[in-house]
Image (cartoon, rainbow, N blue to C red; front, top):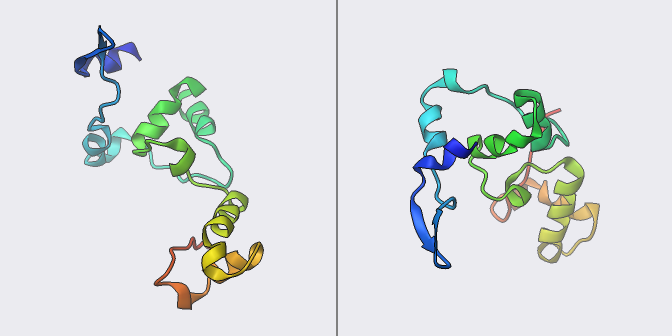
Length: 125
């Protein structure tokens, strides 16, 4: 993994010369044009990026590849939520707007008349 950072620029930080690992790269753009370089995968309910890294690469040490390939900068906010956590998120976000509480908020978000106010998740069974 150390070779990955070789092409990152060197900067001055606290009086020391260090690699600027905060730079974004073109990984996703470069592989998106060549489907032979990656394997498509659909995240299953409740599956974590650690699980995918273990399955694909044989080690959770490569979790950063899962994030990088999916252009995820903040895994806490950008990784898909399971149904329970997603419903909790909807309840917190739209409780004031809907005037409802608990699961009633989730049902309110699914009302097609609210399509202009919110974005909601549709899951095919």
